[in-house]
Image (cartoon, rainbow, N blue to C red; front, side, top):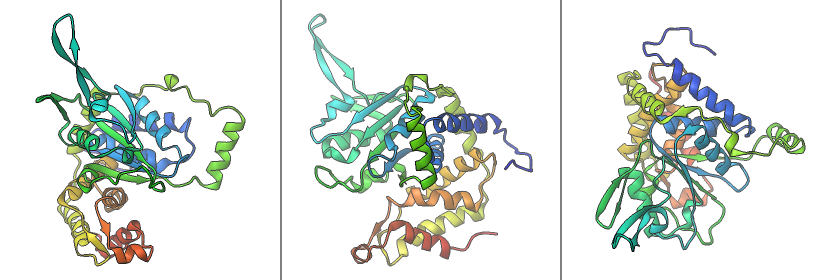
Length: 324
């Protein structure tokens, strides 16, 4: 539905480009609209994303397709238990001609980095990734290399498998803007997907995907997002939701102020994609789930009862009064 009012900020180009990206991805992916929307919000809000779901629900493919619609450098890293920090950040190699060591950059030196099965690698490798995610830089042999912006990590993990996996540290989880749950497709979507497969339209050549948005445009759009209007009562609404996570009896650990900032930035980005230059309570509610679900910890009692994180977040949102 088109806006019935005139924006104070010109969002035409941003809305047009994000819609083009959605259309391009939809040529290859059936359903998963919320996943695509949240990935675009994270891109505009300058955040990293953790995508969780069982194998076969197109987590990796969707992340790859998004990366291919952006005219930037894309790298994919398969995380394994024997993956070393030097495998992702690079290493110094002796050059016999110059009798000196030269630094050979690893796959983390890209704009969009897909880390498949992120929870399969041990602490040392996670620490190397942590610095890149938080500081947008990599330190090797005492020398710091700034990463080219935009820099975004898209990580996938399987929630079912436990063997050969390492739980991500809370501090690292906190650096992900969103944790997105990818569920099974609906009956209708799965039927459509099977028809595509039957008609051989499932074959994807990633080289044929149109480059829709450039690095320069992404940086322009990020500046636009900072100008989005948010009323003071909505800022209070965000802080009340986050504060309620710290007082909820079902939660052992509540969300930090970083979660408040994440909700603020991503709500602004969502407003932009919806062609609005102001934030509404619905923007805040929409992004609250992916922002909070990996930043809070359920008490052991509630976990034993089978209570899900999302249901506690829903209770909190239902209890906090929506500003008028």
